[in-house]
Length: 439
Image (cartoon, rainbow, N blue to C red; front, side, top):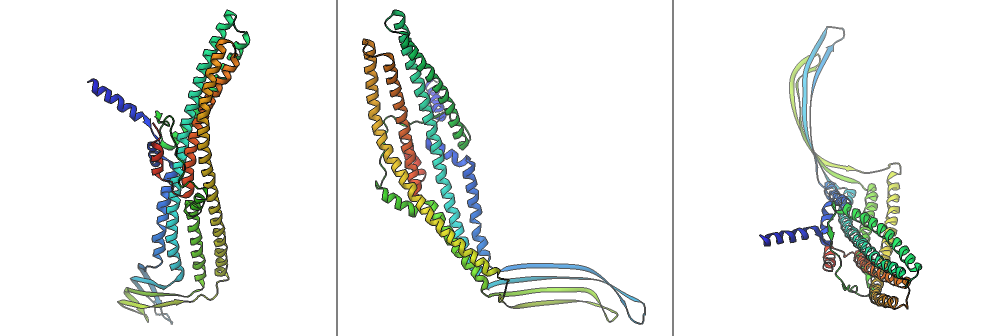
């Protein structure tokens, strides 16, 4: 029974904790922005059957039935001769394009539109990874900030109590007490602000996954973050110029614009269609030369070619062609801009990673030095060679360095994800890799 209870308790603890990979997968199923991108992809894929339809035959079936009344009157008048009858019919028609270059260009354009939609969806997936990671790391940093504020408050509280005791026995002045009290009050305010910031960050994460996790897995103590591979900023920039999803989407847009020019130019070309129809028209009776005649059924079949040659359309076709050409130039410049932006993003992210790693190393050493300085100041205060403010400043330095170290590690991991996103290679596997650094 005890073993079963222990297993249940461990399972409950595990269920409450959430890691980065689990949070990301929950966001995939909940995030509204990503769901909108999924729907946009489904809509984009419909461009292909729409474009293909321009190459396939059109088949139509029509039918009619009408009741007719005729009054026949001859001259000189010999009275009215009425005729009441029904006429009805049906027709089946077929039209198969044989040469419609604009339809072929539209079909090729639809293939590119689907590719562009796929790229936009992949871009939305990368954006979701970045948003989830940023929100997750924001919560971790807010938790660290709050924990640091509380630990600092507890340390200052001990220093305040010590200052009061020393003042009571006459070994310290009231100045030490006032300084400790002022620092305690300031830290209390910082704790309140940190707690509020943590709640805000938790709500931001909740917006992505639809619920607030009870706990989040934090980075392992002393975690080692590797350098980007390849460790060459120029290679990352070159890779981003070619592989960035934003660049791929802009390249697809340029190709679509090329096809649009071709499609508008085809407005000057003749069209040739195969047309065929078969139908029947019937009448129950008819009126001819003042005589009511018997009804009739007529079957008809028509097969032929239909040629249409555009001659003049008021300049609209030429205008649309010039418009498409201008939009193609715009798409070309948009592609150039996308390449430059991707290269810049890669360089910024690469420098963010490398400088972050350097900061982590420096802050790790700084934390050791700050802790040593704090221990020395405490000892100096006990023997009377340091005053209370020295100890308070050393304490603040330790806790500030600890928070800065946590922030530097999280910022470096975020920069790594942004670097891979800039190169167009960011995927769930990268989330899983970072997930191994959590505990």
